[in-house]
Structures are given as C-alpha cells and as structure tokens.
Image 1 (tube, rainbow, N blue to C red):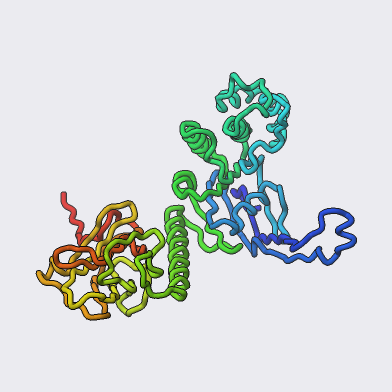
Image 2: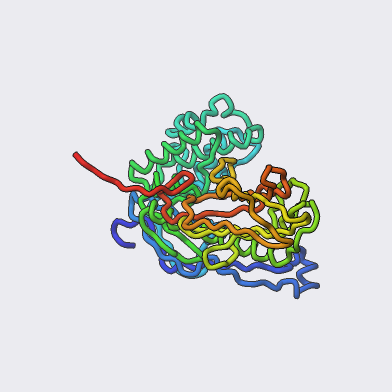
Length: 420
C-alpha cells in the first residue's frame, strides 16, 4: 500500500450467480437438476480507487450500479471475484445497523456485543459506555430488552455504538436518516466532528447535499465502472443532469408509444390524445379532435429545452355553420402557478373563421420557461365566450434548462456589473 493511503482498491470485479429457478430442498436439487440454471451478473467490472488517510469520499450512482457492493467488500462482508482491496487501520461500518443485536438482551448488553464486533475489548467498551448511552438518548430504556424498542430507538443505539469505536476508517451506507429530525442533525454533526479528527470516511448516499458537506471527493459509479470522479459539487451536478436526461428521454419514449395507439376523439368523454388527468367541458359544437406539441423541426415532443421553439397545434371539427371562434392556450406550472395565457380573439380583436375541419397553430419562438413540469390548457370558444370545447391539462410538457444556476419560472436577459 502506498504511504499515506488508508484504502486501495485495484481492478475490483464482483460477479453474482443469479439462479433462474433454484430448488430449495435436497430432494428438489436431486430430482430437478435442470432448475439449477443460472446466469452470471457482473455488478463491478473493474473498479480502482485510492483513499488517503483522513480523506472523505462519496460513492454515487443509481440503484444497482455497485455502490453498496463496493462498500460491503471494503468491510469484508463479501469478497471480490477478482482484484484486490487493502485497508489500513480499524474499520467501523454503518451498513447493517444493529448487526449482532439480540432481541432478548438489554440495550446495555447489546452495546457490549455490538462493540466487540468492531474489535473493542471489554475494558475499551466500559470506557465508552457512558458516551454511547448519552449519544443514543436512551438512558431510561437502556436496561430494557431491545425487542421492546421502536425501530427508531433500535437505530439510535446501533448508530451510537458504531460512531464511538474510534475507528480509523468509517464506512457509511444510506443510514443518515436515523431517528427524528433533531437526532439526524446530531448524527450529521458527529460525522463532521469525526472527519475533523482525521478519520477516513467512505459514504454512499443519494442525497447530494450530504456528499457535498462531508466529502472531499466524489466517485460516480455507473454500470459497474467508475464514470467520473472529482469535486463533489461538479460530480453531483453531472450525475443529476445525467439522471434527469435519462428520465426525460424515457418520458419521450413513453409518449411516442402512447401516441401510436391513439384514436381521434368523437365523444364528450376525455379524448385519447389528452393526459388522463385532464378535464373537459363545452358543448362540442366545435370539437378538438387532436392536439400536438411540436418543436421547430415539426417533431412531436413533450420535452423541450429553454430557448427552444414550441408549436401548439389544435385540430378541430366544426358541427355548426360558419362560426367565428376564439382559440385559447394557457400554460401553468404543475404546482398551479399560472405562467402564460393567450387568446386569439383578445389579441386580434376578431374571431377566427373555421371550416368543417382544420387546425390552429400557436408558435412560441425561443420559449423562456425554466426547468419544470408544465400543464397545457387549450380551448375553443365563441367570441361571446360560450365554451365549445375546453380541455384543461390536455398535455404535460417538461422544460429542461442547461443553466441549472437559474431558478424561477422564466429566463430573463441579464448582465452582471461590478464596481467599488
């Protein structure tokens, strides 16, 4: 191991055998040997990293990417299929809180049992006993069997033991939501104190704020490999942007599949082309038969970028002779905040002539909406505001903004100036 390092992982790979239909009893295993078919699943495909003494690193990535598997191999709960892992110093883990607790033993007895798992002898545990009990805030329950504890009390005791063993290396896996809000804050402050004392920390968390506050470096694991590592804020932003991009891509794919099987509406029931949560009213004298959200290239989409052209296309069928109508479009954020509304009649001062069938188009050039989910309302009314067909929330669209430092509803042109 290199001087100054606390952890070294070199080309670590981990394979699991996933049985498709494994027999559970000896009889089944003998009689139905074909059930032992399995496939190899590589969770880690060659991960290498180093952690210096006193350094705190965060492991991030989506569920199933190999973060927790990496941490369990650092604790030697499991071992790599290939590659090497070296650690220097006493290791304490907050992975399986309460491992070794016995339900019929008292809280105090379980402190001795659990702390011994971390390598403390009886005399060392005696010296730390008061601090452990005080931190857990379970003084009046410490002599009761832990089976009488609530889940929050159980976790408090386990956490208090794990952080009071004076470990050189502390491994943490998604357990910072221990107890109530005040106790969580207490645990977080304790972790900061442990770091200041020079303890090496490896933490797995989906809460990027925790990673940024505690860690010096973040490692992003994706599909069993390290995709990126560096400053927690930079890696966190890149990771969250990637996750959001994948979520929006899936949303687009789902929308495309949905549109393939849709039919034109011909009744007052909610039409196929609208979202299921939409509401509809009106006498259908002029009926909306389709609605499209298109980009500047005429491609139908539900995900747009800030600054991108958006085209709303309202198709209709008219059941009355030669009316003059008012086409209306509204945009509201999904929390109910009205963002924009436009009426063709109010803007032009005259009704739009309609034929037996046709469409109306509203084009918004370089939309200024910022990131968020927005609901589109469309309507066709008479010039004296009789509702022919009004569908509220006809479609939800998502806006993504590459400049994540901006917040609010709309993008505003601006310049910074500084003086002294």
